[in-house]
Image 1 (spheres, rainbow, N blue to C red):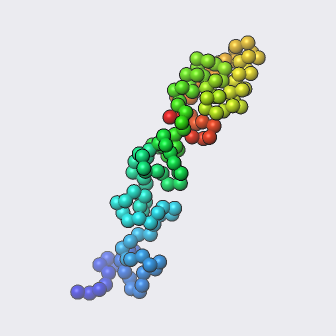
Image 2 (cartoon, one colour; image 1 turned 45 degrees about the horizontal axis):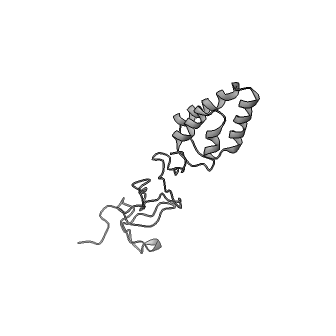
Length: 146
């Protein structure tokens, strides 16, 4: 039997000489920014974390996500709830929902507009509350409302 490569076009087969970087032949290089772990383990070569939001499995670069992460964007969830913020905006249209999520500037503006227009400006917080319920809203820290 010969010691030559089985497939001359396979870049991971030895083509003579010593391997570069100390990795054995047949091992693909790690993806940028990912830990060097073998295939089949979470966080290995090119494998994203398999269960976003599952306790004990954190997305890379996130120090912690106690309420989980959004399954599509990967942004961690806030401790604030979307339903509470939206209902506060609709039922108490003075910007109270914005104060709840931490957007004090917008909450103050909605409060002032509602008071200065004798209640006509309350349409702004109501529409804002509907948008909070219908879309993926974020709190003042940029975290997704859960």
